[in-house]
Image 1 (cartoon, rainbow, N blue to C red):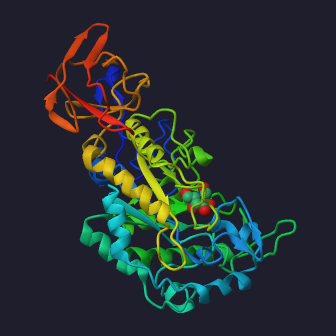
Image 2 (image 1 turned 45 degrees about the vertical axis):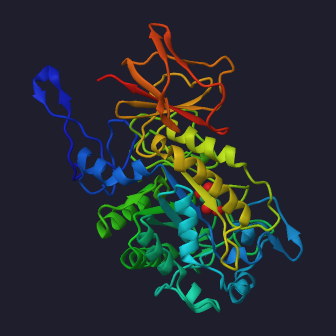
Image 3 (image 1 turned 180 degrees about the vertical axis):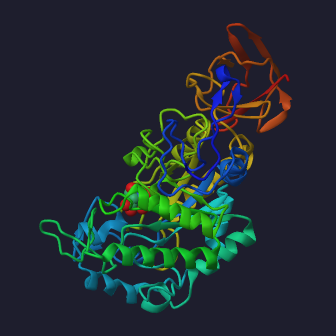
Length: 469
Ligand code: FHN
C-alpha cells in the first residue's frame, strides 16, 4: 500500500473513512498505483502548497539561451519552426552549435528591467529556462562546463541576478528544465538524414547511459534548487521513449524531498496528453498541474490545477524575423478566458542574445499591465465562472460573493443580459468606476444590468455583481 493517507467512504457498512487521492495527480480512478509515491500530503496541505500559484493566475515564461544567437537563421536557412529548436530543424551538429556560445554575450541584460516588465504587466511569477533541450545551462552549473559562466564571454550568472531581483520586487521565481538533452553524451540522434549529435524530437539513449544521465539531471536539479530556491520546476521534453512514468515519479519525489513545498508540472512524467496538456485518466500520474500548450481548454475542470503556456508571436526562443505578434487585446482576452476556466496563463518572452526583451513584447506587456492595473482584482485569486454555459458577451470570474463580468461585446441597447445566479445580486458597478452603481433587475429568467452607453475599456470592461449571503 502506498505510503500516503487513503480511506474509503463506505457509508453502507458504517465505516466512515474518506478516500483522498494523492496530491500529485488529478485523475480520478480508484486504482492508485504509484511506483514512487509522492510525499504524504492531505488535501489541506496541498491547498496550502498550491495557494500562491492558484492566486497568481498570470506568469512570465522566458525562453533564453544559445539559440538566441542564430535567432532563427543558420547558413542562410530560415524556418517557420520554433527558434529554440534550430539545432534540430537546421540539423546542427553539437560541435557546430557550441560555436554560438562565444557569441552569446548579453551585455544589455538587466535583471531589474526584466522583472519590472513582468511586474508592470501584472505577472506574479517568472519561469525561465535553466536548461532547454540543447543542454546549455543558462546558470552557473558546477555539474557541467556547458554553461554561461564557463562557455561564453559573459562569465556572470544572470539567473542569480534574476532570482534575487524577482524576490526584491515580490515576484515568484521558477525554473523550466528539459529532460531531453541534445548535448549530453548519453543521448544521440538516430533519424534519417540527421547528424547523430544534432537535435531531434526523440533521442536514443546509449547503453548504460540512462543511469549516468539521471544522475547528471539530479545533480543539476539539486544545484538549481539549493542555489536559486525556485518555487516551481517546470519540466519538459518528457516524451522520450527512454523516459517512463516511473522515472517521472522518482524525479518528482526527488525534487519534493529536496524542497517539500515546491510545485511541479505534469511533464515530469508521462501523464500529459500531448499539447492538450491534461493528464490521462487511466492511472495516477506525477505532477501538480496540467500544461495545455498554445491553447486554452474549452472548459475548466473543477478541482484540477492547470496552466496554459503560450507565445506572444509564434516562437518561444527569439527569431528575428517572427513578426506575427498577437495583439494586446488578444493577450488580455486570453488571460481572461483562462482565468474564467480556473487556470493560469503563462505568457512567453524570448529575449535576444544581447539581453534585451524584444520591443514588441515589451509594448504588449505594457498594454496588458494597463488593463491589469484597473482590473487585476477580477483575475487574481479568482475561481472559474459560476455560469454553466459560456457567456455570449464575454467571460466571468468569481471570488467570494462577487462575480466579475468581463464584457467584450458592449450591449448597444444599454442592457446587459446575464444568466440567473444562485444568489440574488445586491449591488452592481463597473470595476473602473465603483462609485457609480448600476441598476439591476433580476428574476427567474435572469439578470439585466443597465450599463452606460459606452464601455469603460475597449478590450474588456469589468462589471462587478455583488451577491447576497
Ligand atoms: O519543445 C518544447 C518547446 O521548445 C517549448 O519549450 C515548449 C514550451 O512549453 N515546450 C516544448 C514543446 O511542447
